[in-house]
Image 1: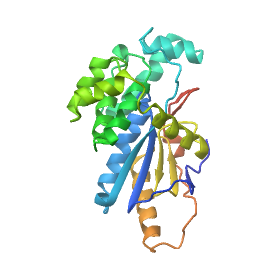
Image 2: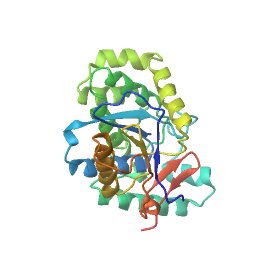
Image 3: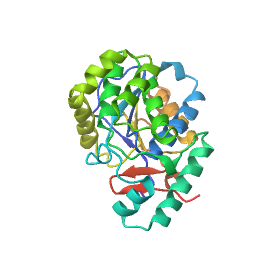
Image 4: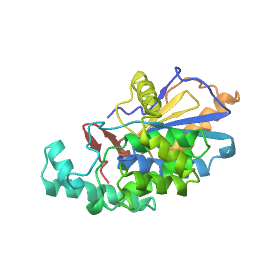
Length: 260
């Protein structure tokens, strides 16, 4: 893996005081883990109240069936050419990393479904200031509660828990609203060269690939803030880190599990 996990990014626009764009998929275990690690780093950032987080859509496998056809262990084994036992061991390792961040992953009952409707619903939620809350609930629904994210009633219940109007959410799910928004997010990711998630872009300048340690997220936030306010002489330089190999990341080819 490239030891440089931070790179300069210049083709996103609309910077606020501090803006963090986050590409992720609800079926990506390291996206949920990475979200927690980022939040941990952010909680220690002196200017955290001046940070705006924008969650963006990224589907690891758009061809995933809408209804579960097999459990996650069998699905992984079939897709990536490993035994079911190997898939179970890999999932166990990921589950241990999740637990270290205070998360509970229930792989044995997880329902492998397409995430398009869930992503569409987050764009609807964004228009009502509820995208961050809905994103957290959708991750929990998939990894902890073993919910089917293609089931309309399930999504409506989660939308209600996030404070959204159920009838309006139902209209969204009944059609194809916000599908274009999902595709736009994915096209931006493609232009940036994103091949795996989670993927964080800080202040339209630095990109962090993978579920990096909280300390690295904090370092990047502090560096971006210093540059924005003329407090740094290293503007535009990449951050070299030795923690790159500790990060987990998922692509359509599978999830790279760091060695503990």
